[in-house]
Length: 125
Image: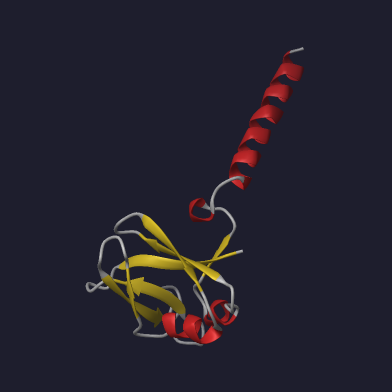
């Protein structure tokens, strides 16, 4: 009898956890892909939606992409992105991940004037 109660309780808690995880909005871990590599930028096209997450002001902004040219321009090295909430400008940089040296694998980062990572872009699925 105790095993049946324990099993039922465990199944109930698992069901609650799974349903909560699947119901999260994109900026809380739901359906989105973080843009980090050049291949991620190439996947962007017309009617794509980007989520701009500002860690400084704890806000998100949804950006509708009109065409591939706009997406490439936004993610290009040295592009400046403004957070509409905190009114600060951040710079897009492409660098090697800290565990790798050299090679074609570059990672996109959006940094402030001090070089600290302050934002990231993600594509809604």
